Image 1 (spheres, rainbow over the protein chains, first blue to last red):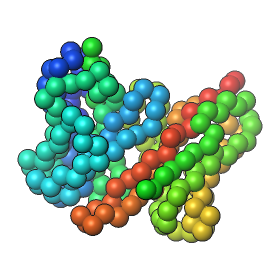
Image 2 (image 1 turned 120 degrees about the vertical axis):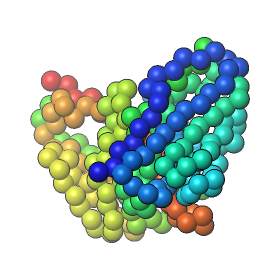
Image 3 (image 1 turned 90 degrees about the vertical axis):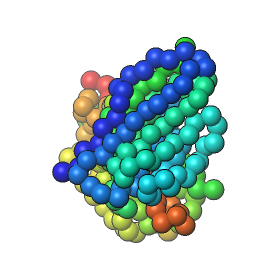
Image 4 (image 1 turned 90 degrees about the horizontal axis):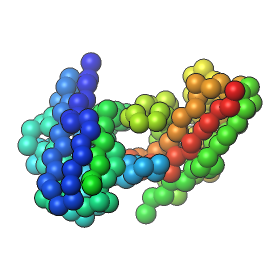
Length: 110
Length: 114
């Protein structure tokens, strides 16, 4: 069966510090991968999606970037965090129909 | 631009009552998804509706899709406290990159009062 992992589960970072969130999928190959952000009490905002290694589509440029160095690994990064980057970050994978979400990373920028 | 709107945004209801959450979307899509999110948790898939007229039921929840009206409903029958959560609908959009991206509604926060 397929499993999706995210780490860390929680993170507190000061403004201006870098960020790296990791997502890995097990039990499937060549998945479509997605990063979403959910601000407190709000809906999901699609940030990036990827159809394959090195292929990244950006929905929200801002100060975030994503990379897919391996088939089942998706990384969300920032060089300098802003207060507005606080939120719940969800990674998801899809085979083309169903979308499955990871447990999420709660990021607080102080 | 594809937009997905849900209403109501907040719903407080008594146990045992029935209610419906509505999900409207702005462009053609044959597939509609419903998710549940508990506080502080990730999203859990509830239903995938794949065609016009599709109806799916699980326990006290029933979802339906009318692609001509661009409308999906999530009906709650005889609500119980355990159904308290935030419910999201989503539609997918095919991209030229060869994948689908998913556009989510604003969410409906449901609170069932004992």
